[in-house]
Amino acid sequence: MFSTTLLVALGGAIGAALRFLSGTAMLRLTGPQEFPLAILTVNVIGSFLMGLFVVAAAQRGLTHFNPFVMTGILGGFTTFSAFSLETVTLMERGATGAAMLYVIGSVVLSVGGLMLGLWIARGIFA
Image (tube, rainbow, N blue to C red; front, side):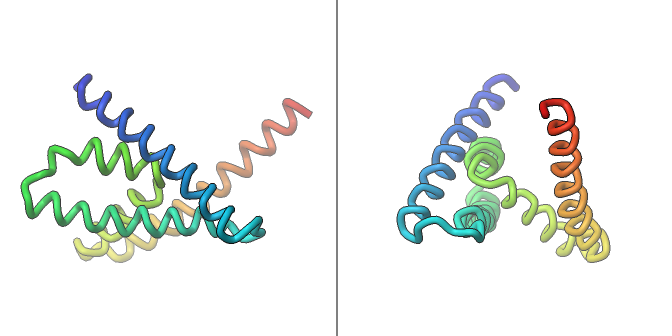
Protein backbone atom coordinates (compact mmCIF):
# COMPACT_ATOMS: atom_id res chain seq x y z
CA MET A 1 0.00 0.00 0.00
CA PHE A 2 2.77 2.45 0.91
CA SER A 3 4.66 1.79 -2.33
CA THR A 4 1.47 2.32 -4.34
CA THR A 5 0.91 5.62 -2.54
CA LEU A 6 4.46 6.67 -3.42
CA LEU A 7 3.86 5.78 -7.07
CA VAL A 8 0.67 7.87 -7.08
CA ALA A 9 2.56 10.77 -5.47
CA LEU A 10 5.41 10.53 -7.99
CA GLY A 11 2.97 10.34 -10.89
CA GLY A 12 1.00 13.26 -9.45
CA ALA A 13 4.14 15.39 -9.30
CA ILE A 14 4.93 14.54 -12.91
CA GLY A 15 1.35 15.27 -14.02
CA ALA A 16 1.20 18.59 -12.15
CA ALA A 17 4.51 19.67 -13.68
CA LEU A 18 3.23 18.71 -17.14
CA ARG A 19 0.03 20.71 -16.52
CA PHE A 20 2.09 23.76 -15.52
CA LEU A 21 4.36 23.41 -18.55
CA SER A 22 1.36 22.95 -20.86
CA GLY A 23 -0.29 26.06 -19.50
CA THR A 24 2.93 28.03 -19.91
CA ALA A 25 3.32 26.78 -23.49
CA MET A 26 -0.28 27.74 -24.35
CA LEU A 27 0.26 31.21 -22.88
CA ARG A 28 3.35 31.66 -25.04
CA LEU A 29 1.54 30.38 -28.14
CA THR A 30 -1.68 32.33 -27.79
CA GLY A 31 -0.91 35.16 -25.39
CA PRO A 32 -3.20 36.06 -22.49
CA GLN A 33 -6.78 34.86 -22.99
CA GLU A 34 -10.00 35.63 -21.18
CA PHE A 35 -11.25 32.14 -22.05
CA PRO A 36 -9.43 29.37 -20.09
CA LEU A 37 -8.04 27.78 -23.25
CA ALA A 38 -5.03 26.22 -21.51
CA ILE A 39 -7.21 24.39 -18.98
CA LEU A 40 -9.63 23.25 -21.67
CA THR A 41 -6.71 21.93 -23.73
CA VAL A 42 -5.23 20.05 -20.76
CA ASN A 43 -8.63 18.58 -19.91
CA VAL A 44 -9.19 17.32 -23.45
CA ILE A 45 -5.66 15.93 -23.82
CA GLY A 46 -5.82 14.28 -20.38
CA SER A 47 -9.17 12.70 -21.14
CA PHE A 48 -7.89 11.46 -24.52
CA LEU A 49 -4.80 9.94 -22.88
CA MET A 50 -6.96 8.33 -20.18
CA GLY A 51 -9.04 6.65 -22.88
CA LEU A 52 -5.95 5.39 -24.66
CA PHE A 53 -4.34 4.13 -21.48
CA VAL A 54 -7.42 2.36 -20.09
CA VAL A 55 -7.75 0.22 -23.21
CA ALA A 56 -4.01 -0.31 -23.73
CA ALA A 57 -3.46 -1.33 -20.10
CA ALA A 58 -6.39 -3.74 -20.15
CA GLN A 59 -5.38 -5.28 -23.49
CA ARG A 60 -1.70 -5.65 -22.57
CA GLY A 61 -2.15 -6.75 -18.95
CA LEU A 62 -0.60 -3.56 -17.60
CA THR A 63 -3.33 -2.55 -15.18
CA HIS A 64 -0.80 -2.65 -12.34
CA PHE A 65 0.40 0.71 -13.75
CA ASN A 66 -3.04 2.28 -13.18
CA PRO A 67 -2.17 3.97 -9.86
CA PHE A 68 0.97 5.57 -11.31
CA VAL A 69 -0.44 6.54 -14.71
CA MET A 70 -4.18 7.07 -14.20
CA THR A 71 -4.37 8.35 -10.63
CA GLY A 72 -0.90 9.88 -10.53
CA ILE A 73 0.21 11.29 -13.87
CA LEU A 74 -3.18 11.85 -15.49
CA GLY A 75 -4.84 12.79 -12.19
CA GLY A 76 -2.11 15.36 -11.57
CA PHE A 77 -2.33 16.55 -15.15
CA THR A 78 -6.11 16.89 -15.00
CA THR A 79 -8.71 15.40 -12.71
CA PHE A 80 -11.13 15.93 -15.56
CA SER A 81 -9.78 12.76 -17.18
CA ALA A 82 -10.98 10.69 -14.22
CA PHE A 83 -14.33 12.49 -14.31
CA SER A 84 -14.62 11.70 -18.03
CA LEU A 85 -13.73 8.04 -17.47
CA GLU A 86 -16.31 7.63 -14.70
CA THR A 87 -18.98 9.28 -16.86
CA VAL A 88 -18.30 7.03 -19.85
CA THR A 89 -18.10 3.94 -17.61
CA LEU A 90 -21.59 4.70 -16.29
CA MET A 91 -22.86 5.22 -19.85
CA GLU A 92 -21.31 1.97 -21.09
CA ARG A 93 -23.02 0.13 -18.23
CA GLY A 94 -26.32 1.49 -19.47
CA ALA A 95 -26.70 3.89 -16.56
CA THR A 96 -27.21 6.95 -18.77
CA GLY A 97 -29.40 8.68 -16.22
CA ALA A 98 -26.79 8.19 -13.50
CA ALA A 99 -24.11 9.46 -15.90
CA MET A 100 -26.05 12.64 -16.62
CA LEU A 101 -26.79 13.13 -12.92
CA TYR A 102 -23.06 12.67 -12.24
CA VAL A 103 -22.12 15.25 -14.90
CA ILE A 104 -24.68 17.83 -13.80
CA GLY A 105 -24.10 17.18 -10.11
CA SER A 106 -20.32 17.36 -10.46
CA VAL A 107 -20.39 20.66 -12.31
CA VAL A 108 -23.10 22.35 -10.27
CA LEU A 109 -21.88 21.11 -6.87
CA SER A 110 -18.20 21.75 -7.63
CA VAL A 111 -18.84 25.29 -8.84
CA GLY A 112 -21.16 25.80 -5.86
CA GLY A 113 -18.50 24.45 -3.50
CA LEU A 114 -15.94 26.84 -4.93
CA MET A 115 -18.34 29.77 -4.61
CA LEU A 116 -19.11 28.83 -0.99
CA GLY A 117 -15.39 28.58 -0.23
CA LEU A 118 -14.80 32.00 -1.78
CA TRP A 119 -17.68 33.51 0.19
CA ILE A 120 -16.45 32.05 3.50
CA ALA A 121 -12.81 32.95 2.88
CA ARG A 122 -13.70 36.51 1.85
CA GLY A 123 -15.74 36.85 5.04
CA ILE A 124 -12.87 35.59 7.19
CA PHE A 125 -9.96 37.32 5.49
CA ALA A 126 -11.63 40.57 4.37
